[in-house]
Length: 333
Image 1 (cartoon, helix red, strand yellow):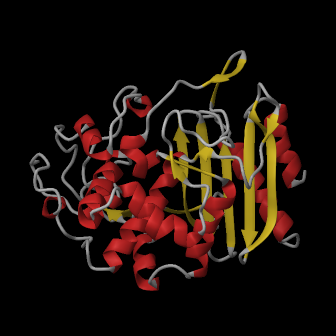
Image 2 (cartoon, rainbow, N blue to C red):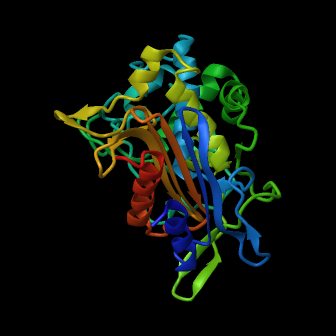
């Protein structure tokens, strides 16, 4: 079964409302296609170059790129204490560092209950109130807990250091230089016209997802973007054209906890797929969105999949689709 047929099947079987796919090899497009609908009511199809999705936790590699810029300029030290930059942050049992926050080894907790779907307008500084008074859940460096609050804290550090709002700094230092013109913070009521409708699937089909306000966790999961834009970020890393190679390698190296790899670097997943191919990138799962972004350095492949539905449960099918993509790229393999 060819690649397109696999992704068409997800739509035909009502697993997802719409899906954008972008694949590049050595910086050249080999597949860019939309499947299904950006909006069911109007019948608007998905356009991988123009349809804007919530990218969920793909926001973290965007934020990590901004952090890397400040580290390269000597304005932030990865092994500095958080308190060097935010001395008013409530004191905990242990000190913890910028590196530990970026790698999810600082001991900050994950979401409780329905915190992933908060719908109250908060800026980044105000958003820290959601978790700042809670104790660390383990001694920093001795455990791993994936969460978005780590990156909320880091984005506040970046604001203090840069003297700019986080979104302004990212736009000036990451998005504009990379040409990511369709990548923006999600501000409720001010969505671009090309934004997909966000859905949740239930037993009867797709319904519009509940409204959320992700501004306080912009760095962890608040950006909107297109498949084409996210591919620009991936290619900048793959080609090594944007950052100092040694520092980029540091961000893309898995941390270890108690001698075991976490498969997570600094804002980036660092792992292998089920066929053993090494990649770095990120997955995302948010209200009205599922996203997958991978850079396969050995194969020179950048791959982006964006879906406009909450937790569609199609991971196995996406992996099957990725296998098909590699077979199409290298039919002798």
